[in-house]
Length: 361
Image (cartoon, rainbow, N blue to C red; front, top):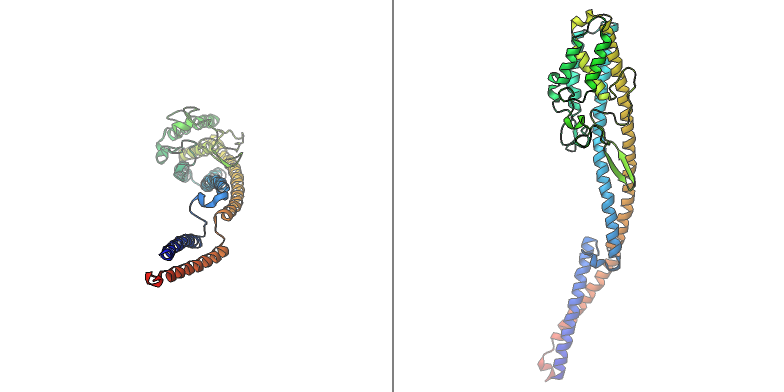
């Protein structure tokens, strides 16, 4: 009887051992399937703290990278938009000069092209990227030119048109000065720009800092550009400027769009106004290109920062892998050993179960 009791106790120990070996085999099987030591930090034992720290750093780097990617996409769209505005300004400038010097372009034809370009530039200022208006400053949910589609019936255009209509012998300089004042205005009903962009802080964003993003620890990259103000570029003071290349372009196009064939009889003032407007458009185009160059510098800084984050992220991921990933060759070898142990344990349990009470009688 004593032998039977001992046999039962031995069998119980074998079963317990078998369950322990089975659990170890299941753990190793999961590691082989997933490539990871375990699902929780508790499975990492001494490496848990280091894994937490590295993953926190990875999350920071990923945040930087996402911000850089978003800003980079916006910058690319901004560059394309500004390039198109520059093309329109240079094209209308050339047509205006040809109209004065060679008479190869009719006033009505240039005026119609200027009206089309004016509508396009106003719409381009409302370009969006990533769900935000790119030239609206911090008021990115609202259009910087609220009524871009109806710019030709706006107070801005109608006032310039009325001023151009006053052109007469001897007042060309006055028309130029008055249209410059209109284009420089931030007064509601005159400016085509939003209330936010036309009012100073804190109620508005007329003088707010340009948008920037943290590209790395202690490093910010400025890239924002408001529709009614230059960013890094400085508009040349000759000919007279509003200080904003976009305002100068809108003013130039609006003046050209306001001419009629009867304007050509008002010489030399017609030529004076047309020539200065053409030169102003060229000057605005140069300031625009300076702005694009500055934005290009921002793009390169963001690209360099993104590459640094990518390199560091790769290193950090390798460190995490060294802590969290199961060594495959070793794990597979252990799995085979444990499987052999489990089979041997099952065989031993089976042989013990063959004993019965009759064997001891």
